[in-house]
Length: 124
Length: 183
Image 1: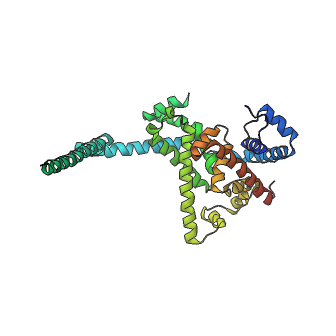
Image 2 (image 1 turned 90 degrees about the horizontal axis):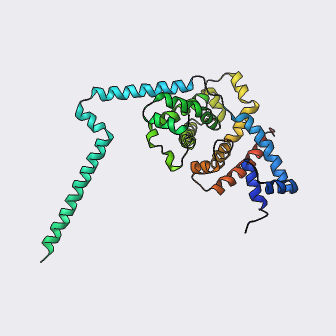
Image 3 (image 1 turned 30 degrees about the vertical axis):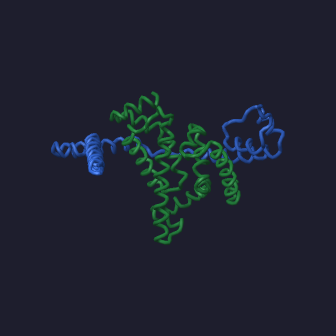
């Protein structure tokens, strides 16, 4: 069953949210003194805040970001270019994951072998 | 050009594509950071770091999961700004400084200090004085490009909570502005 009349609190939250009201809620606001007072207060506040909200972006900002990115890339490239092959492998994320996987598998194998040995010795 | 294509290209190290993304979202990020009332130079550094981090981690961004690029950027900027605010508070606590001392530290001229007291600054000052949990919800509610769902994702709380925070936050903001005779 749909609720024909939502509580004023919910309608006032929608007024504060300021992205439009349903036709039923608009009708309610016009006939309810508390809601229309809230609408007037938030309308005044919103027009004030929206006027000052937009910020000026310093000129050339996007270019500076790109220059910084390219500088970082160059630094990274030269870092790798200067290092020998084996060292470069250790800095690669894939290689690090592979080493971690091998290490974990080896550890797991040792644990399983330990338990297997304990069980074999414990059995009569 | 839509965001998805630019993000894909950026992930393949195409800086021209990323430049377009920066141009598209820079105003939103600056507008957001402005409300933390940090010095201009710090705002610019944080905006730059926001985009740098976005570029470094762009391969982790997955639009398929329903996240929008703007939400992701705002989350990065928000975390950076909150960290910076905490650092500034610690520095202030050590030096025993007051808010006005910041102006001196930023090297602003008396003319600029007077400008800071201008009408616009008083509104930003009022917004920055909102309690943390209301601050983000109120500020983001003024960005029409962000939906309620996106703000809830940034704030990591239910939709209803965001609406309540916007409502209560705007009430508090109005009270502050009335006390300051701005409204």
